[in-house]
Amino acid sequence: PMLKELAALPSSSQKRQEGNDDHGEGPPSSSFPRLQNFSTDNRCSLMWILPQKLGSLVLLEITDPRHDLIRFTEAEEEGWKHLTSVSAVTIWDCLELESLPSSMHILPSLHELDLRDCPKINRLPDGGLPASLRRLCIIGCPELIESCQEGGPDHHKIPSNANISL
Image 1: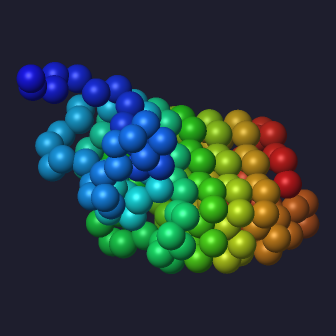
Image 2 (image 1 turned 135 degrees about the horizontal axis):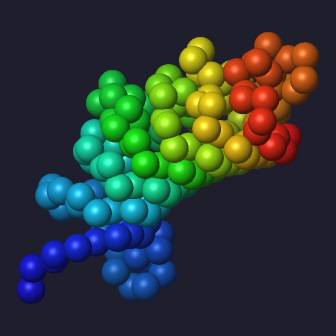
């Protein structure tokens, strides 16, 4: 049978729980124009998905249990610019990740950003966060929390109308 539509692509840990391990491979190299939710704990999947032009993607969740995500590649950085419909991004357990994507400020639909247990991220991107952001939650990122507090060097990069949980 031919796959005609896919609205959500589960992470490899979800597949393992269901007894269908993908052995670290990314999704097939085809386009998912209607993909709305993408959750990954696999660097190969992340390298595949971000360069795609996924205008329908609404939810993006990235986790890194292998701790091999240090920074986003050029192709991945470029891919963030095409996530025009994404409204919620969660990045968690990325213990080695040093920075957020530089183009986060141009995500026109981003309403929620959750950063959890990414202790090496210490600053927001130079461009800041998009004006559309309504909720920012930062847990387990001590230097970033300090930087984002009122009076901190990155506080001005957060939209004034955003609900901030540090």
